[in-house]
Length: 350
Image (cartoon, rainbow, N blue to C red; front, side, top):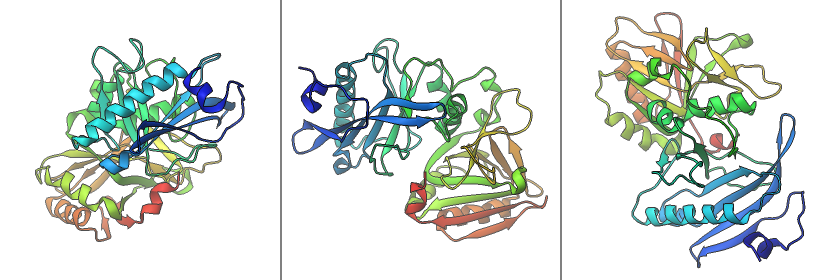
């Protein structure tokens, strides 16, 4: 009898079922399994979701992997691969080698889930899923195929996730694995991107969005930082020389109702949004900071924004980002940058 049959009996049901727990390391690591239907634009998608339980004791956020079920597929082979992966992460965490939002795991010749499987895995804050009770602080595991690994290295996960969201028409990005999909997160012309020409860092708990009154691209950038992420921001900025251009890759803003998307050749900013969105707040995929300018200005750049700042303005903004004080900085071109500290619950609004 296979793993799934041992957990829930041999009779198959197509409705959501309660969680089932599998012990992986006695009294230390377990896996929760849920079979459920995920609402999507054209109906529902039959899924399996696997969640770790116990990684937090080793300083690693628990992980969520949601797979679209193939017709007639048995869960056992897939569950076995997930178990091996979770046990690997558990072992690495014991060596203080952990993953977080914006990080990625790259595999060698043996891909995850076989020779045609994922070349890498990336991590974002987990979304709320119908039928699955996953804590918001868990990490969703996103498969990376072929050149998508290189795209994440060059641009960060937010751009890749937005492209997946655009393809599947699921905002802000599809939380499920489609193991039969083509390469979507990397695109021709990526080597021309301005984001690839500067160093970048992804900061968990850092959100950036443009206010768009009437759905028109605005000139006000709002940066929101979780109270708990202040130390992460300070550490990231400490590694950057004060007068060198660099980029911060934020998480998708949970308070936004649209997310920028870019491919080479696009004319003007593009975006995806959930049904019924008015596009009043547009989450960006990066913020490039370019100091040593003669005046301050904010410009739309691909799926993000560029801040061209005088050294005095950048010094002030840097202090605020590190220190935690609120700020509104007026720009020479009439735009403005606002910095806010937000409570942890802000990140759970997905």
